Structure formats: structure tokens, C-alpha cells
Image 1 (cartoon, rainbow, N blue to C red):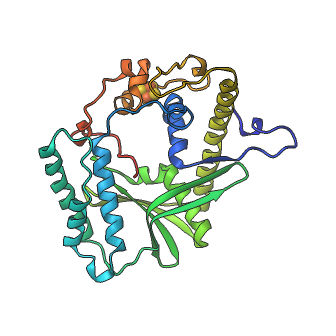
Image 2: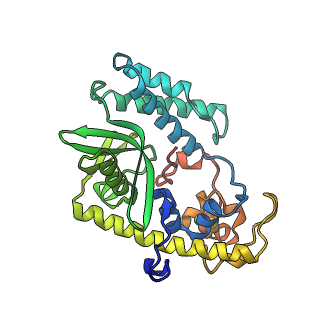
Image 3: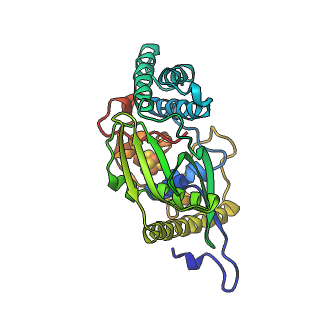
Length: 303
Ligand code: SF4
């Protein structure tokens, strides 16, 4: 549905408040979007994923490393931070968790060995936000560097999938971060980088003002569709009984028109698959630790 349909003639449109994750959730699967952001109480999720624990442990360790006094930012300190903050959820057993903790420690130490501890980032896990007359978008950037007179958005990746400059160029999330960082910090920000920790490779893209604006228009289009579905959900909720408690089964019937399921191979990794017959039919549920060994696993959720 077009953005223009959101407001009544002559009245201001409702501002759609979101994160890049919310926009991507709408694109991936409207049913999953509904269960994540609208259904209350939220349907219970499946068990935690080991790859998310690993991603969060690594992100936390790197953020903590940059918060250390400069003289304490050593390679060994980075390894210690991984060990100390290791999240164990989702692994098959203690042995598997310990093995991956050591791999993560080595990965972070290798990465940190190529950093200059005196090269102070402008922000670490920095929240930024921007808005247009249609959307208000915010998000947390893993690291915001200053290079010359410009800002650079740095996003850490811990999945096995090797990344290219196309991934950096096409990322709606990174483009919105760049726009929001430039707005909040009043400096140009066009370069976005994906730092792939398992290989140490950096996939980068230098946006132009035009390419950033294209991403912003795209975000507005996605937001307009999601906002129209959100409004439909509110209208339906006024008429139909919603689940009274989390144990009640999820009935998708009233919402299928607005929030259709989008079954795909990704259903194996969906937190809500157990509430979704179409998703279960599309792809078998994976073990919580399965992504650690997959050649093309889902990227861990940002912490
Ligand atoms: S299992 Fe698949 S189709 Fe069902 S909600 Fe999740 S992503 Fe969507």
C-alpha cells in the first residue's frame, strides 16, 4: 500500500517509528513481523540459538575492549573479555560451549591484533536516529570511526558467510545508520564497512548522497506497507479477542490477509516456527547449535 494512503487528506501522516531490524522483519516474513512486534502477549519463542550467543559475546567483548583505558587495550585483554563474558545459551553441552569460546577468543584476539588502540572511535554501540516526515528510525551502531573529516559505520559480523562489497552496498541497515550518524553528529558519513571477524576481511562501500537517499526512500516504502498492516491489525484487534495468556495457541486466521506467512529455508531458524504450520512444512527446525557448522548460516542477531 502506498505511503500516501496512510493519512487522511490534509492531515499529517502517522510517523512510523522503527529500527532497521523491524523493516527487514517485514520484508522477510509479515507473519513473523506480527508475532515479533504486534502480538501481545508475544508468542513464546523457541530455545536460544548458540550462534546468537556467540555473536553477542563477541560484540560485548569488543565494545568492552574499546571502553578500557587506552594502555589496557591489549590482545590478551580482548581474549580475557571474551572468556569472562561468554554466553553459554544454545550450545549442545558444556564441552561444545568451551570449544567455541576458545575459537571466539582466538578470532577476537586476531582481529584486535590489527587494530590501533590509540585510534579512538567516536562511538561504540552508539545509538543514532533520524527522521523524515514519514519515518523515525533509530539503531545502535557497533562502532563509529572518524577517518579524516568523515564518519565511518563499522558493523561486526561473526557468521561463517563471507561478505562482499555488494553486501555493504545493499544493506538498508548500514545506509540508515550512515544517514542517522551524519544527522546526529553533524559530519558527513558515507562509508559503511562490514568487518567479518572469522576471516578478518572488510567488505566496504562508499555511498553517495544519491545512494543514501535511495535507501531512505526504500525504507519509507517498506514502512508505509508495514504501517498500513499495523493499522489493519489495530482495527482487527478492536473487533476480535486477542490471546489472553501466553499459553493460548496462536490463531493466524484473522491476520493472514494482512500478515501472510512467507515460507522459505529461513523458517528453520525462525523463533516462532512452532506457531507456524506453513513454516514447519517449508523447512525442518534446526538444532540450536546447528548454525555454528552451516556453510551459509543466518547472521546472528545484533545484541
Ligand atoms: S516459520 Fe517461516 S513463514 Fe512462519 S513465521 Fe517464521 S519465517 Fe514466517
